[in-house]
Amino acid sequence: MAHSEARLLVPALMFVALVVAAVASLGAPLITSVATSFHVSLGSAQWTLTVALLSGAVATPVLGRLGAGPHRRATILTTLAVVVAGSALTVLPLPFAWLLAGRAAQGVGLGLTALMMGVARDHLPEERSAAVIALISVVSIIGAGVGYPLAALLAELGGVRAAYGLGLVVTAAALLTAWRSIPQAPEGRSARVNVASALVLAAALLLVLFLAGERTLWSRHLAVAAGLAVVAVLLLCAWAVIELRSTAPLVDVRAVRHPAVAGANLAMFVGGIGMYLLLTLITRYAQTPHGAGYGFGLTTFVAGLVLIPFSVLGFVAGKLTPRVRTRIADPLLLAGSAVVVGGGFALFAAARSNLAELFAAMGVLGFGVGGFAAAMPGVILAVTPTSETSSAMSLNYVVRSVGYCLGSAIGGLILAAGTAPGHLFPGDSAYTAAALVGTGAMAITTLTSLALARRRSTETNPYVRHANPNTGGSMPKAYWVSVYRTIADPGKLAAYNKLARLAVEPAGGRTIVRGGRVVAYDAGIAERTVLVEFDSFEQAVAARESAAYQEALAALSYGVERDFRIVEGLD
Image 1 (tube, rainbow, N blue to C red):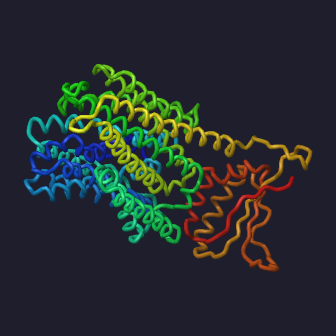
Image 2 (cartoon, rainbow, N blue to C red):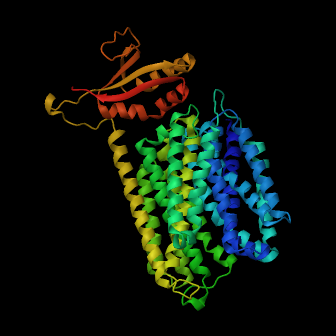
Image 3 (spheres, helix red, strand yellow):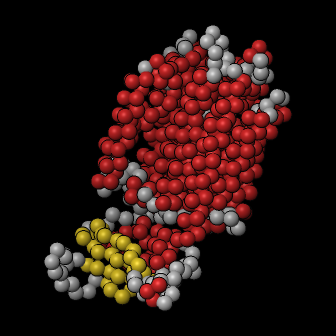
């Protein structure tokens, strides 16, 4: 892109990501206002938040797959049009069911965050795109801190419709911005959506989020809740099988098995539980009236101001992280950020007697969350082809959404358990117990991130050497072995061969067999075979995970079916 176009694109991507995150979070500060305005229970009003998270979790992988294809711009504009229509439904004087439908439509916009990352990776220079992707990840989280106080203030001044009116204005602005600034996807892309897979995933996520939100179900009908949990697990397993067998999966499940991707998603899941747990603890504590023996009795708007340090320091961390990445690996940044969030838990557990301490805890949380969010894309995209950016990051955001819901549910369960019979509010010690649980979650996140860092340093350093006692300490060679079972698209194979050669040779690979004559014996099959030699096993693995070779794999796509493996030689 031209420099002037790139300058306009970056703020557009940031604005869209910020708007969809802020609008989806509008349900949180308005739950009480919705209950009183529509004369429904608080449990029913809670669905104005849950339904947005649910629709976002379902839409994210679908939009991620569409975003990997040639119609990404149309997908973005259509999705924003759906969000605007949903925003209109929340403003119009319609019954409660229409409000839920509007909130569901607004939640669909959460799936656009991964597409914004795909646009940045495709149309910006590599060094620039990494920083922009990190900031997109950050603003998708701190958007809640921006929308919360504004929505609360408007609700106090003009009622719930006025608060949702803010969403209509900013989503319309986001649609106009995207229409003027988002470019077309590069040529040569293709993407199809597996409808059956999307439906099974939607059913599974509906059960997961329902079980996370309906806390009374676990306390009053444990057997029913456990049964639904088993059904949810079975649906997720069925979804994984469908994805593995599909020629056009929503998510490349095989890529998810890569240790870096699997570890990053595990860290996001557990870390998301802890991060959202602390966020809800602090805001709820601030609004608890003095009569409970603790708390500050803040109004919804003033409590929303407590989120300002969260947003500001989260953005600061997001700006600093790309600079630090040049010296510290992304997994180590994840670990460090998890430690910072754990420090926020410790601060909240030990000191919450005045508002300044709550502001401090929220600031520490924001800084840790900002760093974590900025480092996460680097871990995943390091082993992801450019064309699969949207799809790979979309799964990470589904995992994050589920983690957030579980974090909220766990916090509610702990506080409910700490509420004495006949009392409206939990005891102060319940908040301490919840903080300790959150500290444990961040400890697990830290250990997972450190394991990722250790694995990366071992696998991607071509100079690591392991002595072989059978060869007097010499380094054993390693080999890529590729056996092609079927070749569905020779054109894709030809494109792959050109790019693979550019990736393999600079990495020290030497092709010693390329589809020559084959005579098969015993159970062997005469198939096209390619053999590439490397000086070490670590060097072979690093070449396979390099960005250059991922580009080659993207060109190959589903053009062939092959057996690919890396084996270590004797010398």
